[in-house]
Image 1: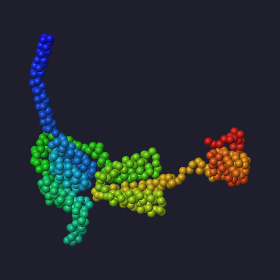
Image 2: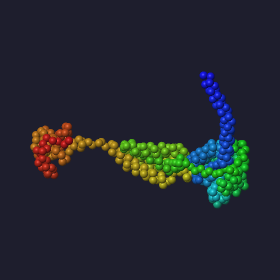
Image 3: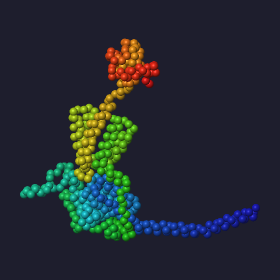
Image 4: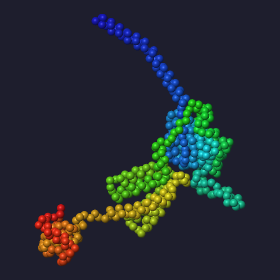
Length: 491
């Protein structure tokens, strides 16, 4: 027993010695792993990627969604810099403000570059350029003309010696509000970034524009760069303020990473095209109406519902004029009324006028890129008139007409007596042999009228005392088969 205990103690002691011997190696391996992790992190930091975003064309909901998503992702990934390459004629105020709000709250410095040569940062693009931490332009590019398009600039010269010819047209109170708000907004951006406030105001008030060289000379932009890579090289070691905190950019080992819109952005870009959204809304309404007036397996209704939901999603991203939407729906209602209760065209003409007017004013913006085109409105209006006045009216009349059963079709029909009988016998009706009853004697070949049906027996009334020659052949054939068919009736 004692020997066994001694062996067990010896084993325990050996095990403890082994653990004690291996423990330093364990901590050494752990330390090496930590050092490797730090080294990998350092290498990763030195090879960080700079996202390059692109604005090409009008600034709308799809562009704002794309930029906002990618700027937030860059903040999450702690990117050293974000570059926005811009070439735009302008866009929606709502989309512009959404983009600038994300830029102003970004913890990552954002550089905006007007590129390539020949590009412009007009209207909304000027506001975005002013909002970015670093503003740059390539050669042969321009910026400015930031007047809200619903206001316009001064009147064109008339050539007359009029001291007032240079004055702008009288503006309404609403136009003054929009103008002053835009001036205050761009001045606040200029103050924040330390750029030229006076020219910023001129860009809004008088639609002033500048070339790249002029913009640099007047402290409207930060620097000139020929490309995104050139901009990245120039900004290495550049000091910039991010949320009032100075920061020196270390970009020597950074690389550019172009970020293109994903399928979601492409989908939003497609459906927020006003022409597409408008057509989807019309198809949605008409699909649901078609399903209501001609119920089937639900294809029209389901398709219409999907189109309508997508259109509503698109419209909540676009500037909608609700008066225009109300006129459009009123026009549809009047066309429906004309289809169901013809009024010699009064409702129809009113519906066409309301529908067309509502379609024109549906999108509340003067930006031509976000207006519904006149050819599309004309085509949809023509289709609507045809749809309501022909298809829908036909379906409505079909619903109003009572369903004619076989029994209703037989009552009032004319038949021919096959054999003489006083009360019960057989007649020929529609090429078929029917059992019949009467309260007056009938003779072979005599014409009779069906007044009612009792189960499968016809109740007759005499209409002629003479044989109907046009049915004589049918009578003869049925008489020849009398023995075979006696007592039978159609099933």
